[in-house]
Image 1: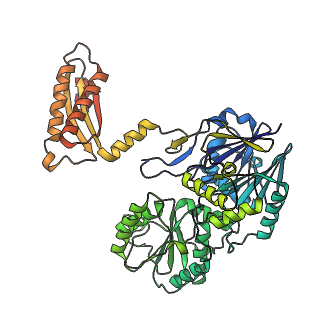
Image 2: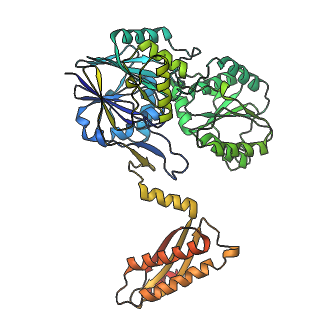
Length: 566
């Protein structure tokens, strides 16, 4: 009896950290292993990765990691998985090249023979299972989809794709591959759903090029573009036009710089070395304001707006926005970043009126739109459709798209992370269980979850500030030798609140009098009571709840004399 399980550990009902497990013949095939970037309310968090508990417990069954493209939401979590165990990783030359750079940067030990380069002609055999890759059009070089051949038919994972007729991929080879899969029978199609609500055509690429060419050719001063770092195709278009008009190019954004340099090294981008500028920090002799400069500001989500805001306020170390600059915004705000985008644009207009905004028709999304999803479904004719790579609203929109081409609801499977979708003898038998899933908030290089307590403290610091109360206490004489010193951060204690610090000191002495009168000082209780009393007072007076940190230092007289002498 043939049994197949599909388990998404990340990437459904969310946008990012794509990680899909396919279990066939007791082997686990990992399709992509990405991360996602935090929203602004996750203070201090650098990246968010998947909980790997399930894979950690079943590592002996993992056949390998199969990657589709070099974006962080597809390969950014590989280093965390390879920390657990050395695994075989398959991907295109460009994808593996970017991955190697990440592994080296994070000091992950790996062997070159563990990273196996694949092409659209590669077939990898695992017993009766065969895995093939097929080229797809996307906004990054060498993007692939993956086809897993089982006894019950193919399972196709498209990853991100589109049918952009302006791309340079070999569509004839792609369509031949899809036709072969369709002829042999497709059990399930795992297709991206991010663009399922999008009915926009891709016919505007020529107009986009014409508008960009007109801007670059007829602007005599510095140009500043904002582009999302994932949009390599658009970066390439801007670079090509700039070079044609004898401009020099500077890219701001470390991750994008590395990606672009790797694309140049492998021949996917062509930027002459003398046209590529590494900006130096500004000083009296260097302003980075040459008239032939095209500056491309990149980042994820809110980052391009954040960096433009710094430039507008004159606090960026590389660029200070000037009245003569022309700013071209090619970044439609993500959900949740609209306020920041609007505020940044207002600040930019204070510095220069030469701001060019483009409507969405000129900035088509790289993900497959409704008609392109229909085209993929009609070519492959899968038995079941599983929307992946998208939030619930995208998955639901894809259900409507599939319904338009004749699919019944029972053949369109909307799932959540951790669900186990089971197929037996070519039929879907339902969600038969669940596995641990979730996300880890990573701060810095350490692969350790930040945790709810730390995040709550950071939120309090951001919203209500901090009060630090420091004092030196002699445990023998049970007297306060020095202090208390009260430091506040994050809220105003001046003007109408001039007595706040005085009152905090009074509370300190009242609490200290009680706790220093006991035979033995209970330092833990002393700090807890002090923290509670100060917290209650501040909330009563200011209606705020800052973090209260009492620092009580056990000090004898001799030590105090030495401290004063120093």
